[in-house]
Amino acid sequence: MHGLMMDNPLLISSIVEHADINFPDREIVSVTNDGSLHRYTYKDCFIRVRKLANALGKLGLKEGDRIATMAWNDNRHLEAYYAIGGAGYVCHTINPRLFPEQIIYMINHAEDRWLMIDPLFVPLIEKISPEIPNVEGYILMGDDNDIAENCKLKNLVSYESLINEESDNFEWPNLDEKAAVGLCYTSGTTGDPKGVLYNHRSTILHAMALIAPDAMNLSNKDCVLPVVPLFHVNSWGSPYGAMMVGAKIVYPGSKMADGETLYSLTEQEGVTLALGVPTVWLALLQYADQNDKKLNSLQRTIIGGAAVPESMIRDFHSKHDVFVQQAWGMTEMSPLGTVISLKYGMENISHGDLVELQVKQGRGMFGVEMRIVNDEQEILPWDGEAFGALQVKGPWVCSDYYKLDGAAGSHTDDGWFDTGDVAKIDPLGYMQITDRTKDVIKSGGEWISSIEIENTAMGHPGVAEAAVIGIESEKWTERPLLIAVKAEGRDVSKEDILKFFVGKIAKWWIPDDVVFTEEIPHTATGKIKKTALRDQFSSYKASE
Ligand code: AMP
Image (tube, rainbow, N blue to C red; front, side):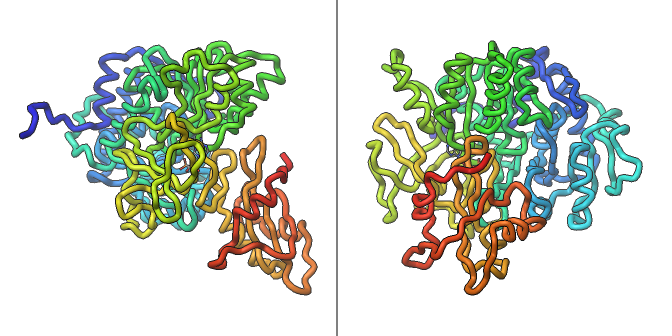
């Protein structure tokens, strides 16, 4: 017997409708490309969202078509999220920090029909445009003055001229809640980037979990500064969660890692909650330190994407009275999996014990099931000692990658997603990452493929074998170190090898150092034994 409840689909357009009525005067502030602040209200935002939805409808797109965005965190990017997804298309957010080859791959793989680009990325897109012939046109996220006279992009129209004459009435389509709404590629594993395809239902459920008291505890009274990019897992779902509750939103534009901008935005706008990876907070803390400034309005930061150093937790607390909530998740998980929050009975926890808790990745929330397993897939106890492969399940965890049909081998036979992280879980349910099985390095919140660096290094005639591991870095969390065995009879230097990388891999992927060794350890199956190398170089420090 079915219950007698209304069957309203969970759609992101319902956030627009709710927020438009309930929080019309709430502000959204963005740093623009010329450094000035753009300020408007939710009401103004939604007028433009509906205009854009009308304009997109005239481009001959059909439901489910992909429209890509390449932009920083600002109001136009936010508008694009709601107009594209709400109108039934799929918003494919592209990370501009990836190399051109990866961007070309993603655009072609996603079969993007139109690209919405920030003027700052025009030179990059002009260069790759011959390689993305199926893109029908480009929307420049600015006005006509931002279009350079000699711009080579076909069917280029400015965002402002596109929406200018449009009606601000738009009837949101009554979509299937399982219809795709967003697409984000992760380059966090080896091989080509893999597309994670979110649907309306997963997006709404994730946002509801995100705003809950024991998660981000987001409310109408908050002012949120999402420094995590809108092109990285939907800025951790913040556009949806923040607008559900009507929080003020402050976007740093392209000034994502500029301590001074982050500080002044936080102070001027009264930011209470900030979201980002450890690297950006290091910039903010350093700026505050060097200029003898205190963060006055900020109450808490959600820090994730990489392990949060204990010193950062302590600095935020002792110098700024800010509570650090470490969170863990993945692109494949929308992204939120665990977050630090106190349990009952912990009200009088000592400061030392609290910090010990905060360095963990957090505890699970309703909606994400977690388990750790050993190599035989046996489930391990939550005793704070046993560690194993961390697997998850839930309505906002991907069931597969876009167009891969199981080929990635990322899911177990009994339907769990293998995260590639190794973890232990204590009896209270706090999870702590101890290692990674995936062979990648995360530097400043962005992935570096160790295998790609190794393959490039092996292309040098003086290198017989190469292995790349991540070494600890205060600023970037991890940096790549190349360990190489010289080819017989070749006398190759560190400088030769570093020079060899130039032009072959992105500049920031080039290892900080090269160490020559006689032999690289291998597993029984002949794979490089990264764990042994990580142990061997555990005290190796990256030059900052
Ligand atoms: P991404 O899909 O780019 O968000 O990367 C997800 C991966 O980043 C996870 O599988 C972890 O390896 C790593 N990660 C995310 N959050 C944390 C955290 N709080 N501590 C340590 N590693 C993290």
